[in-house]
Length: 163
Image (tube, rainbow, N blue to C red):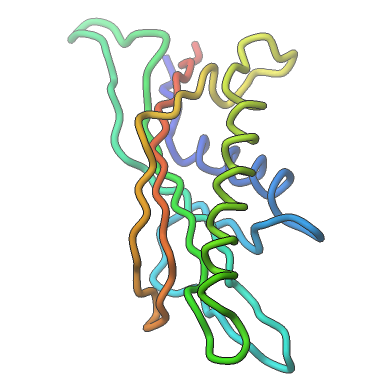
């Protein structure tokens, strides 16, 4: 039996989030499929880059089975972190930051609702079910020396192993 690798699920989620949440008129500028120490939020020529970033990070697994078999379905856990630039004097305000974190939260929850159950898809899905686990938490974080508003969401994903 081939066990589903968490990195493959992170890649599939990145692709799905890129499609749903990034681009013109959408609330996220970039999605990382790994934890990174710097987003390079820059303001050059009046353009603000990387003020709204998502990070997908592994958060453990619950692999069931015994010494003689591995269950066909397993649960992996991922955190999706939202980072919104806190403020940049005369160019990005605290209000824009707060509005931005709310916009990303709403879009992420809509995305989750559209992708929570994938058992009936024609292609083999990267996950079968996705559950939002508890409440999100908002804090401040410094990434690359720049302050961001940060909201963390924990998801449990039921995945199928293959023969």
